[in-house]
Image (cartoon, rainbow, N blue to C red; front, side):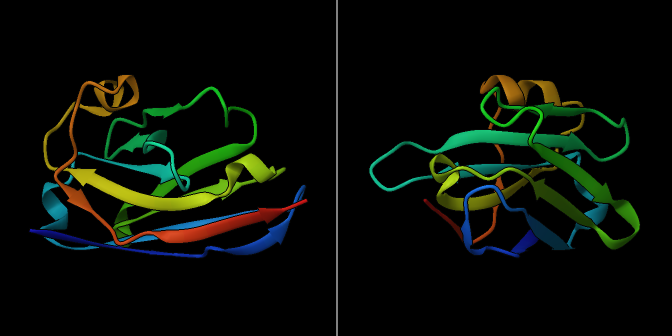
Length: 128
């Protein structure tokens, strides 16, 4: 099993930045990819970004390209989401997710792969 813990959310003004962190524990050696999803009230969960553990692949949703950056520290088993130029439409609960299956980053970005591990989420609220 893998446990995921998100942190870094908050209430901010439009145009500012936040960095989310997701720390993995447990069977961290088995993780093939980690990613971020978000869900706003009354809306479906949507893909935000994903990164592979060892291949260096990163993929983003069109809505966040150029503003968000996903990165990772494999030694710390931690993935980050740097969010710049935040907009009110970025307001959502942000969830970290992971899969033990290798080579799935592109399929995760395409929405055709499932992730078996999920964190509890961290709230991001962007005003104005």
